[in-house]
Image (cartoon, rainbow, N blue to C red; front, top):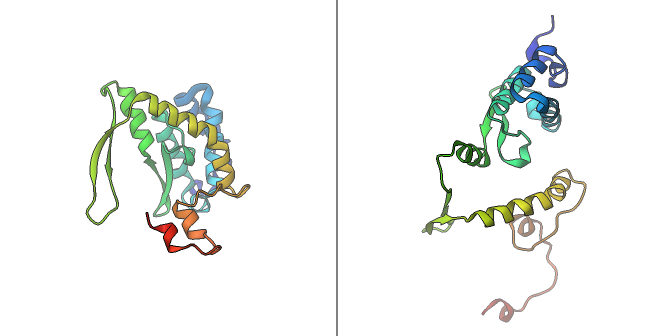
Length: 180
């Protein structure tokens, strides 16, 4: 018999035992979730090289918390560590669980700047701002995925780290243009 840890995830998820575990937790959403497990492993060489049963176990943790494992969503990640996959909750996962608990009226963010002497503040984010941000994420998600996959070039803003690190010298700028 083949060592289970070395059987690729795409084969493991065909097993009735594993399908049953995900069906018990997710019901009719299980096939879509199982498909996302296979996609994540196929797109991450490090996850292909870990104990494949640990990938399934980590995905079951995410399923039991009803959190998606699509890495770009930020709810739950499957992280390779010492030869095994481990579930790691992203900040959106913590927010989701906090909101579901009904124990919190609102969530605040603590902001710390990156300056030598950092500026700190607690920021309340009104629901309408969160809804606007979610709408923007939904609107741009396909484009973000295309950029990450290399299908399209990112739109340059000229201000972010990516734009700064890939900037090419072009026109000469007068010092007067840089001083207010």
